[in-house]
Amino acid sequence: YATQISLIGIGLATTVTVARALGPEGRGLYAVAIAVGALGVQFGNLGLPASNTYYLSQDRTLLPRLLGNSLLVSAIVGGFGALAAWFVFSLHPGLSPLHGPLLKLGLAWVPLGLCFLLMQRLNLGLYEVRSYNKMEVINRGCALALIGIVILSRRISPETIITANLVALTVGCFWALRNMRPYCLSSFPWPSWKLLRQHLGLGVKAYFITALSFLHMRVALLMVKYMLGPQQAGYYSVASG
Image (cartoon, rainbow, N blue to C red; front, top):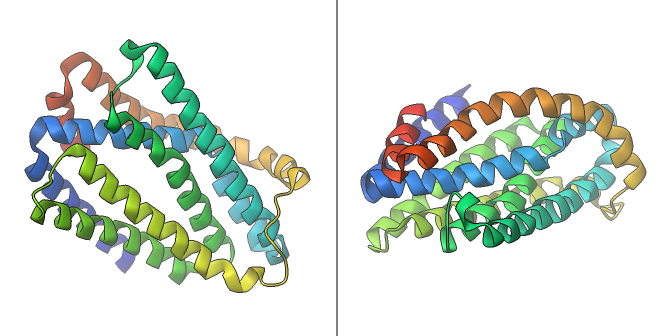
């Protein structure tokens, strides 16, 4: 409970800091880039966060194979999915919600965000609730600290703020892997196609339930940006946040 309250406070501080630093238009572009990455994570997770937690909580010996599957999905589904999206947006620039470095950074969020989400849920499946909470606080707190450094260095732009978030996400991934290391000493985390296929049955059910509610908020932001421009998207993102 204390972690959740802390995250609300950190989230509010981050929203205010970024909005003040970037202004409405910059905040809108930043929010759209985050939304692009978050949508990629939501589409690419295949329901594995739910199935990994469910099955690992019953059998800890599955961890090396589930970890291998999670890293594989992050790299293949997240990485190649982001490349495919970039290729489509390059061919049809009118469809792209962003352009240039900001689009690349938003798409880079997909594999990293997917890896962080899956690593988090594996820790939860191990009943490492304290580690799960620490990961949340470290990720959000590190992002806020790095954003503060960017502001103090006077290199403020949507691109540098997004980069600060990506660095924090990378730190969170390594922290999660570090927490799971003692459970994987006896076996290398090779992926298992058979296990992945079995677990997708449960995962897909959770996938569609969460995807619809998640898309409602994220797609609305993209619609505001397309119809009214980045400045209004900035105002909308702060209000909805």
